[in-house]
Length: 267
Image (cartoon, rainbow, N blue to C red):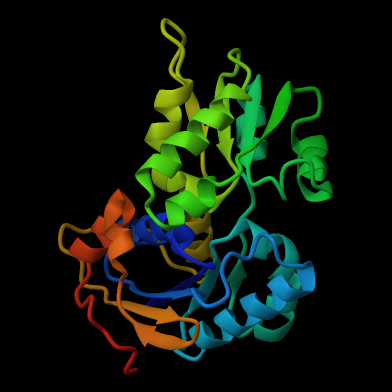
């Protein structure tokens, strides 16, 4: 079994780690676009073009499924990717976990990039899944970029700025960018109020990983010893897991629990 994941950068790590935990025997292909990142400021057509190039590079290695582990690409490129690759290659998009967060009751904060916060896409999700729930969109300028470069001071500053915009009454937070899941506990620490019930964070990685397995008819099969390989593609070029990935638990898990982290995409 081979599962490919794509993003502009390290935002694919949480979903990749989730797949690794569910199926340690799965070979993983991580396809990113360091030459073209960040995708957020690009026009929708430009995002779709970059995402399609990354998806084609991943598809060349014949995975059984492709996870689009990026909210921006899922919004702007999913129809294009599915039109070209399906039904031969199932394509699984990423949607912010507004529905389960709202179902658990508000108030809810939705942390996302400035481009996503207040966008028609996010407003539609709130209207569809959180109607009648107190939901606040919180823009997080600079957070994804700081996470991408593992800039510790930048991460702290961006989280603090977003926390200042977040109502103190919230019970849960939707992590509306896949990069944010890499620093989830730091977000929790910045928002947790003394004496208040434990804050609940809602990411997408686990649900997306489980959906990928369902699409290919596979069941979770955790095992003590991983046997799956790990391959990396940078803007179409063979690569290796970057050092910045090791700054995060998900990246360290992939490096530690891979049969061959130096696979140069030879087949």
